[in-house]
Image 1: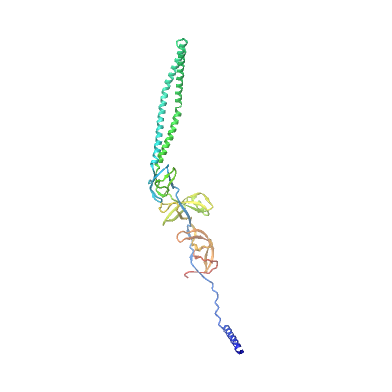
Image 2: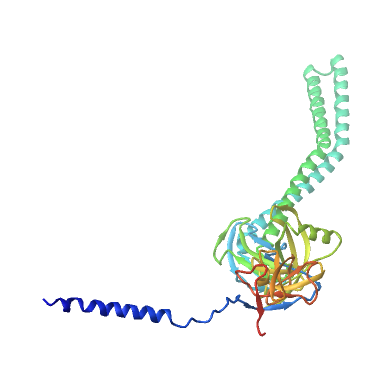
Length: 408
């Protein structure tokens, strides 16, 4: 093999590597660009302190303190049901009727007992009058019987009458004496017998009143204008005394029970004690309704105190049991600043923009500003009119971060 052919590629390879190194060493260098600090483009708002009333948002449930439950007045069968659940009714409307044949016999029976005892009372009065009239006659008969005994005993001593005749006269005297004592006892016992009859008559009349009332209540009438909350029976159902049949509540006496936070209940207690009434609004069925705080619960728990907000004007949009979001207007405060929720950091900070950089400002959150979109009311002695605040939520927001307002 030719050695020249074997070693010839080696110099060529070395020459190529050397040429590449020379070209790399003599290439022109790129210009050095200094690092540029990133700038975050953000939304801003201008501070404008003003007097405002914070809004407290509460979730509550609609209740009715006057909700009534119609119960069966006795054992019977449902004859007709005239209403359905959710139906609006007027005062005096017939809601439901039980079969009167289940009640009328009891009324007649009770009336018969009353009539019987009234007759017994009249009989006792007549009997007493007769006893009084007969008392003097019994006394005269007793005197006559005593005189006969004395006369027969005198004649018997003179042997004009036998001993048996004397004994007969003595027996007549004893019987007449018993008759007189019986009559006197009947007269003396008159008041007791009269009291017994009157007591039985009183009970009978009470039973009659109860039977008549049960019969009258077999026709269930609406005691007020309102809504039927629930119907629990149908025509033909057998019901027992006291069994619930339907529930009704007035349209004009609705209220919302909502929990006032423990951190703010003292504010509402002081306002209530001073005679003030907190106002609230709620959007129900597309209608903006007004409420007022009528009273506070008598007992609180760790979460707070229940407040009862009364609907100021009747509305067909509200139903018992419905969940309602109340916006309660609190006492007005000065130097409040309205900011969006995204402007608040860590629940207590906003960022002011100074010379294009962020600086954290600690604020006191007063509450919601109300309206749409949802906004917050905050205050801080460090915030002045004209200050520019960050209105964009930046995950990396820190003191000194460089920002630029959008649109600049």
